[in-house]
Amino acid sequence: MHSSILLRQNIKPRTDELDVFIPLLTRLSDLQREIDGQMTVETTPSQDATHQLKALKRLIDSFHLYLGSARGLYNDPEQAEVALIAGRDIVKEILTQIELFNATIIQSDGGGFFLLTPNNIVGEANQKNFVDRLSKTLPEGTTLVLSHLLQANVQLP
Image 1 (cartoon, rainbow, N blue to C red):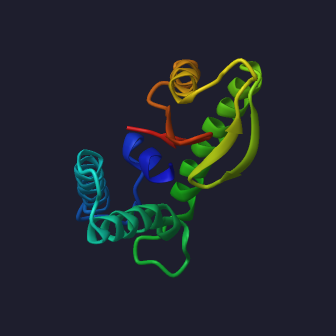
Image 2 (cartoon, rainbow, N blue to C red; image 1 turned 90 degrees about the vertical axis):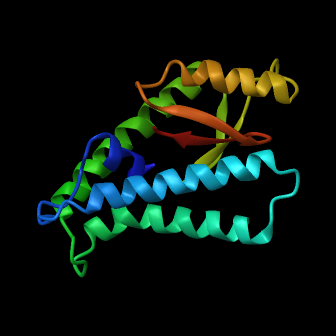
């Protein structure tokens, strides 16, 4: 989520004089979407594609961590804090909306959360519809994606 915030708000280290941080993050994110799209089309994704996708996800996620690291060449703790605050605000809004929709979060981590939908939401199609309706109430550019049964991931463009 934080890497998406970096891209959307053009948050980069102030020491990036060559302007490589955002273009590199953009290219890696595009590549991740491309591989993810190919895997969605394939009935049985290859192990290589699965490993590539996981590696890209970790690399992309590391941009925010690297930005806040005191040891990094492109570290800028103040910019990392800007992204962290923006992410925290998005999560707070998601939690508020989930409560308003009478759903319950049963576990969360940096990549998403597991939620228990209200009793009247039965079946995967209805769960997807529920997540879509919930996404429409969130800040612009923030959507929830139903990864698999009862798990929703935050996705920013």
